[in-house]
Image 1 (tube, rainbow, N blue to C red):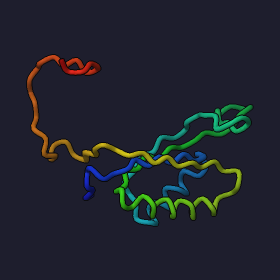
Image 2 (tube, rainbow, N blue to C red):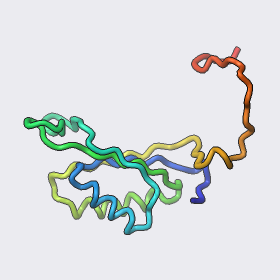
Image 3 (spheres, rainbow, N blue to C red):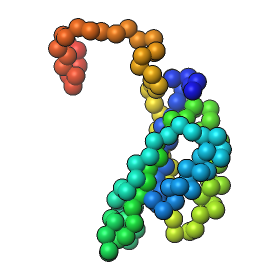
Image 4 (cartoon, helix red, strand yellow):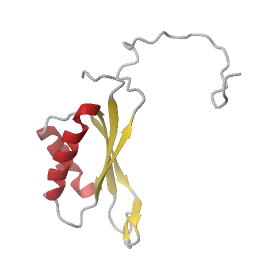
Length: 128
């Protein structure tokens, strides 16, 4: 996978769990094979739209996490819009696009100098 690590976006797709396999099939069909999935998530979308996986509010969500080259995001969104238009109206699907400061695919090969020191760092404080 060749991605400019400084020009990437994180795309998160929320969708009904019942449509998880359809979205996977669609992503593979358009040549997108780099994602992770969280399934069986419970949540509330708005008043009256909840998927809490119980008898009152049945159903659950799946969340797909994708890393996309910045110049390909608009194309992916257009394709996702086409995918969504083919689903039933009552299917919940939302997309979140976030900038990433950096994306390191493989820590072993990235050009970052390793630091083996055991020096203590105060991670939540500004350097003095």
